[in-house]
Image 1 (cartoon, rainbow, N blue to C red):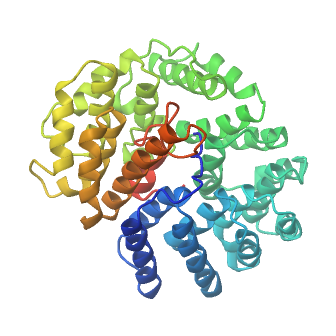
Image 2: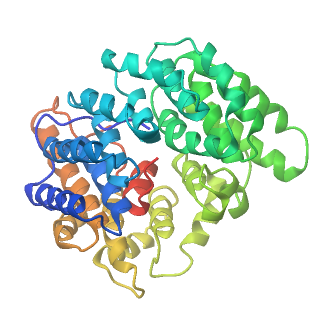
Length: 426
């Protein structure tokens, strides 16, 4: 996923900044029951607001002193500051890495995205730890930072237990799969992990990181497996092969494989019980025609009643001529319809309207979301209003950075959905 460009000035409105900063302050005093969604909202908005990052830096300092390494707010803070290249992150990271369990996988993941050379000694020390999962995580960071050739990483890989492999995949490799290519030295260790991995979605994450490191082995393996075995297995591996090819060469032709609920769930990096639809929308983003029946099934019942239906309506309206679903999205953004969850869908529906080019409808709706009890709605509204501000700046000055423009990414993309709507912080 392409990282959002940083604006030269605040594009997040003052009311939203005050709301989020107040929520952070309150969370430090008493941990809220919805901290995951608060953390996800902060994670999504932080790249566009220096003020929000300041609040996260102050909160991170407090949590590091308290050794509160298992909190979602800690994860969001340390990763957001590392992604933004904040000058304060190196000192905070060094302290966290020297704490209990090396500051958790969140600190080791953040270290991958922080180039400060002062982290090198503490990472080298951790790479020699007797706890293989900590040593492995630290060595991943060293390889990504160009401080190791990967030999030691390869020797540690056979020691990684299944539970630690799952955590490493979710907390370290998923962010790397979304990021820029990493050094080739990571590939041999990932081959060992893939050899022990039975979950196809996690296998794909490991394979994508290796492919971005220049390893052609995963694609060759997927190609061979797509030719043998039962038809369901061949179909799954054909989509894996496409995903690996598309990750390196965007625009690769999608295979003639019709997705099913079971197949899509297998291809997610989330536990199968989540029935996660990430891969369906990966196909939808590529405008794969064979995914249309499954998208249609997601919007069969109106009014739209969940996040999956909102996203399906967006792609059907944009790419498959279902203009009638535009009104369904407007209704969802207004909170119309039955069900206790309709309030939680207003923000993502508003962002979907922006992505459909219905800015004149989306912006007034976004203005209303600042007062929502749902912190997710506040975040979606902020991103929509920020996109409008950035577009106006781009028109006035074509060189202005921001959220919107001819090459602007969609607001309702996979990472934003996970962070804001579900509070998944991987």
